[in-house]
Length: 357
Image (cartoon, rainbow, N blue to C red; front, side):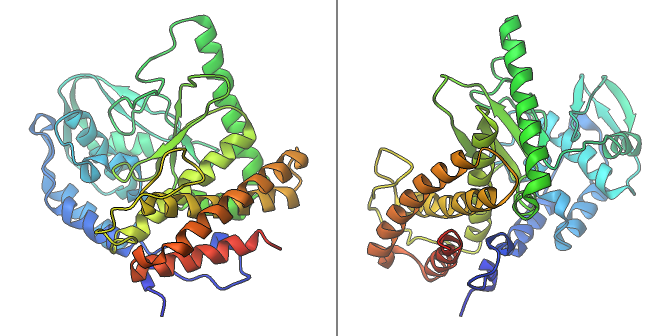
């Protein structure tokens, strides 16, 4: 019997239909929200905010799976606390639309929104007005872009926020990469609607990373920053693959909340198709699941009106070899998977089968 937390996927159906249950994640978020004490400098009446957050978590409101709730999901509550708590309060007011009261900006702070947001001067402000301004800030693309890491209140390593543009060439490069990202999102929304719906069920915001070389690219995501992925921006195909890759990780993180997918006592390391160094078996499962969806993305891209099809076909062949490599490792070491892990593996195998036809 399949775990309800893992969701369901019937063989032959669209791989984009599989969404692990979010119930346990929201239950934990509700508990953290109930204990949230915003930074005293903000002068907030916390009770209405906490009540609203808990109620929204019980309803599994989509707006809570977002980096703006980092105050509730991060283990580090000191660095950046004032900005993060400020952002959480404004984000809650933007989505609840019923909150009243005042909020103090002890210094110039930032109210992040999907199109970037705005500075808030030091002083006393109306919470509902700030929330309304954030809610009404329109953004036409399916995923927001946070160049300066303002949704999480702290600059991330290798981001433009950590090392801002220092030359005209830097400025031009950043602008070019953002335009490229938006072109990729526009094309995907038009040609790959199922894939994009699957992406946006987990990924809300992209933080662009600085490229360390012309050939090397990287991407990342974190359990502590829900809905946020980090990627370098090389070209449109690489961008969409990276978004697929990191969104798959976000889905696995969600499935993992109900319990480990790999036996915690397993200390072995194994070959992974995405890393040169040996990895714990969870790392191989992460790679396998991401590669399964990367294959599905390329299958749909080949079938769509997107170009270049020759590039999609080439990348699909390479991803297929890697996913089969990871599958072999997991099959040989399935004893180290928990029952939930074996179910997750079998569901992922069904995703892999989508690219075999």
